[in-house]
Length: 536
Image (cartoon, rainbow, N blue to C red; front, side, top):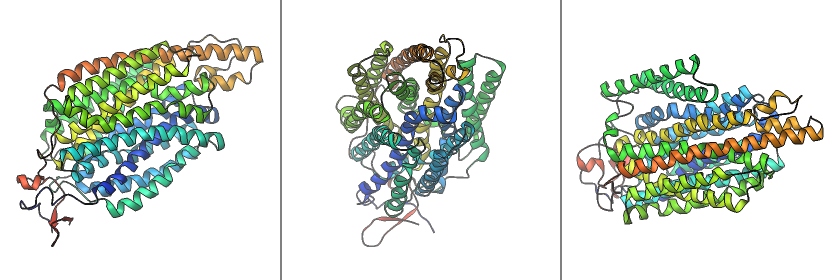
C-alpha cells in the first residue's frame, strides 16, 4: 500500500543521513561511463590495426554508442521514473559490465559495432538515473549544487583515469583489456548501491508508451545517420531519405507527447527559458568539442609517436581543469550569475579550440597542454551549472525525464559532432597524395596508413606516412576551427537564453513535493520514531 509524503514532514526529516555515501555510488556509475568513452579513443589505433575496419566502420565504432544512447535516454529516464531509478540503475550497471566483456573480445568490425550498440542500450539507463537520484537525495539547493559539482568532477576525473589506466593496459596487454576495467567498478557499484541507494520514482507515472519509445529511437538514429552520411559522402538519396524519416519520427514523437495524459517527456518543460537554454548550451558544447576528443588520442600516438601511457598522461590537463572548475561552479554562479559562468566557460572552450587550428605534426606540448587545460576549465564550469539549472527547473517526480533530456543533449551532441566533425577529418585525410602501390586501406584511416607503411619499401613508406600525417593534422585543424565557431555561437546564445536565470539558494524551493501538496517522490511512509521515509 502506498501514500504520498505527509505534509508534516519537514525538509530536515527527509534528509537521508547516508546521502553522501549514496552519492559515492552514483558517481561510480558516472565514472564507469566516462572511463569507457575515453579508453575507446586511446584504443582506436590498436582496434584499427587488429580488426582492419574501413574509415566508415571506424567512425561507426566511435559513434554508434552515442547514436543508440541518444535515442534511448529519454525513454530510459522515463522508465526509471516509472519502475524505480535505483532498480534501473543497478540493472543497467550490471548489463554494462557484462557487455564490456563482449566489447573486449570482439573479433570483427561488425561485431565491435554491434557490441558498442548494445553497450549504448545499457549506458542509456545509467546517467539519467544518477542525476534523478541526486535530485531526490539532496533537497537543499546548496547541497544539491555541491553534489552536482562532485558528479561532474567525477565524470571529468573519469576522462583522466581512462587514458592513464588504458595507456598502462595497452602497453602490457591487448586492446580488449581496456574494456575489462569496467568490471570491478560495476561490481563495487552494485554491491554498495544495493545497501545505500534509496528507491525513488514518480508515484503516478502512467503507462510507458512503447510507440513513443520507438519514435524517439528511430528519429534520433535516423537524423544522426543522415548528418553523418551527408557530411562524409554528400547529400545523396540515402541520407536524404534517412533524414526525412528521422524528422518525421521526431515530429510524431513531439505531437504524441503533447496529447498523452502521461507523456514520456513533458514538452512544456522547454517553455522554461532556463531549461531550454541549458539543454541547448550542452548540446552545442559537446558537438563542438567531440571532434577534438575523438581524434586527439590518434594525433598524440600516430602523429607525434607517443606511447599509450604517455598519450593518456598528456590529456590530463583537461580533466584536472574540469574537476577543479566543477567543484567551484555552483559558488561562482551564485556570486556572479548563471549566464556569466556558462557563457564564459563556453567562450573559453571556443578560444582554446581556435588556438588548436595552428596544430602541426611537431607542435610542442606546452601549447597543447595549455589549450586542454582551458577546455577543461570551461567545460567544468558550463556543464556543472547547466546540470544544476536543469535539475532545479522540474519537480522531483520528473527528475528522471529531465535528467534524460540533459543527457540526450550530451549524447546527441557527441553523435552529431563525431559524425560531422569526424567526417570532416576523414574527408580531408582521404585526399592525401600517396605513391603508387599504396594499399587502399591507407586512405581509410591513419591507423591503416601506419600499418600499410610497414609493408612498403622504407623510402616509399616514410613518404606515404608523412603525407598521411600531414593530411590528418590538416583535417583536425579544420574540425577544431568549426568546433570553435560552434562554441563561440553557443556562448552568445547562452548569454541571452540564460538571462535572469538564478540557482536556488538554501531554504528556497527545497520543501519536499509532498509538503506542497503534490507527490513528487517515491510513495513512502514515515518510519516510526525517526521521521525518516521508507519506500513501500
